[in-house]
Image (cartoon, rainbow, N blue to C red; front, top):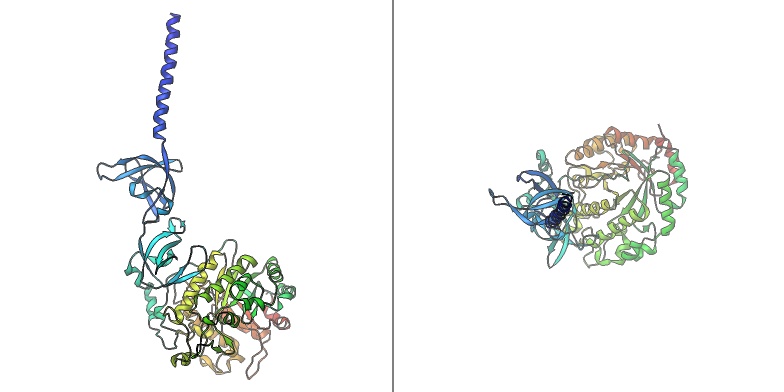
Length: 555
């Protein structure tokens, strides 16, 4: 009996090992998977359970494990692949599985919804060209995916390949050629035709743009700023001391002013040796000053004069607006690179990115982001060549430049602002290419320069010389014009306005003391332009700033 029990015991062990062997072998077959990716024409892919019912969604590009065998729904004949995602089993349609990550995007042709920049490669600001609204593009790849969406598409452009931001592309030509027109707002712009030489408002883009909001770089709700030119940055401690006695919470600091480059920038050295050679500060001393401003808690804005740059023209005369003989045209004593010239775009945006990355600027402000003013007659008579390579209007070139600048500088973690003439708040496209709605809709901050002594003596029906009554003037300008323009677009920028912080330069000569400064600030507030102010004094005069300090005091 004992022998039988022992024999049975060994037989049981043998059978158990055999079962384990066969079970292990079966599991080995079941567990044989390989790596694959989810691919589609859409950003998300639907998953299914064993009953072929939808049970989830995953982003295109998601890395998965798949089994070798296909499962077929006998009712629909749809084929599925058994897939493991995050340790759970799903069924996914066969057509949504690819073995190569670079094949996860299925789009082959898309259409341009607004004229936009084509890049030479995916990771730089180098420009290959322009592609216009309504054109079709052949898709041959992408750079990366974010939540299943391609950030940039790789496209065929002329005889080469380039990259486009996906947000400027749509699926059909019909969708591409129509204009964003919520509540017929586009009709307002469409009526504003080319009367000043800057182009039609209807040819510009008013599609909603998501404004930047950086967690580690918060823009103050109301910026109150002093302006510092490149020369006074050496005395930054004195300005910090004054600012701390007031309500000032920010500084605008020159990066590049016309014929006054602020520091020996590596980008200047590469793109414009003359700018580099005439730089006022060394790289190191300038950086120390900017760091000191930030360490003392100030929001720091870097100002760049964009399309007024005599030194760049010295290095690149081919970029300049030219006279009838083909020579650079001097306007008001300075040379202007054409705002149509993409090499000029690259230089200024690369300089901006360097300032953000190397110096820590919170925001980049583009000044002179326009064509020369009062030149329309010269253009019409053929005495001026703007070198319009892509057959754009002036306003189109300015808006497209700012779209390009925002795309690049936002990736570096900084905001973008644009300076505009006070005139641009009127209901027409200016002759130099600034149209309030087109600019405000794209940038984060729009900064007008309605300096009282720049207006005609009796503007807006005011029966007093307007620079003697800055409150009346600024309130009328802000309430009747700037505020109205803001309401004509879906995604308006913050309005942060320059105020005149210098004595008037025309008769009757008025000392702009703290009372006159306060009148301007109060007028803007009362006109509901509440994004703050910046004091314009070209000399950044410390004595002047001290004089007007009572208007800047903490309440």
